[in-house]
Image 1 (tube, rainbow, N blue to C red):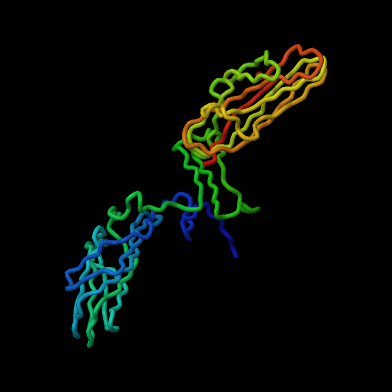
Image 2 (spheres, rainbow, N blue to C red; image 1 turned 30 degrees about the horizontal axis):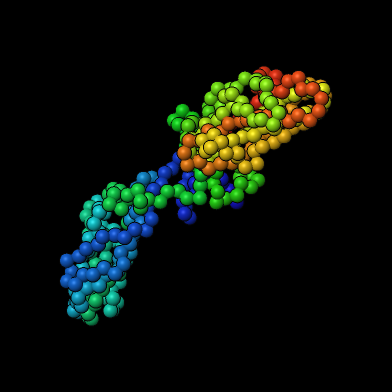
Length: 330
């Protein structure tokens, strides 16, 4: 048996292949009318959708009552407002009468919005049920408003700019087990603004800064990160150095500068230094969900215990390198 893996997104129970598109509404109420005496709808619902080739279809269920029709050959015509059936040929649908089970034929009229139900019966009927899944001439815009549309679900999809070439996709409904790798970008082009995978770092890389005082936090100039609304994974790796004859330390912290310089939970860390000149890196990582643009900043201070402190600083150069960046996750 041959097995084929297809890259795609999940839309309900469908897997839509990469390169294909799909649109689908939620189940919506349809407007169905008829000149039949006493016509009264009981339940009229439908789902409009476009297949991977872009052909629009309508899946519907109609249940209605009317004034009792006597025995004999009768014809009921109803209209689905806002939907035009594909021109060229009639399309068969399923119908059943309420009150009896007559012989019947039911169909959508080609290029129109009407459905015919023709019945031959020896007994009276008081209503009708009609269902079908038929082609349409075009998108039924009456029913495909933004509020009614239901996009691809259970998937997070990176859609690149035209120049990007390769699509990266994560399907949250299917575990990424061995043998089902997820395709990533391989062209070396940075992910565009607003897309999952976008990387933002400090706008102006800070220079080394010394002069931090004991137990008094100071901003590291330019050590800021400005993030727009979205879901972000934030990382920092800060190079610190103290020249001491005794025992000293440094504390580095990340604050939310947009919201009253609030300390980001868990983002205050210490490092200790013994006599001599030494450098130590302090790593940070956290996730954040932002409803609006937010600025984060880095502060540091000396923690003096003994001896003489000659210098204390945070550094960012070719040799003593620091970084502060975020990756968009949604």
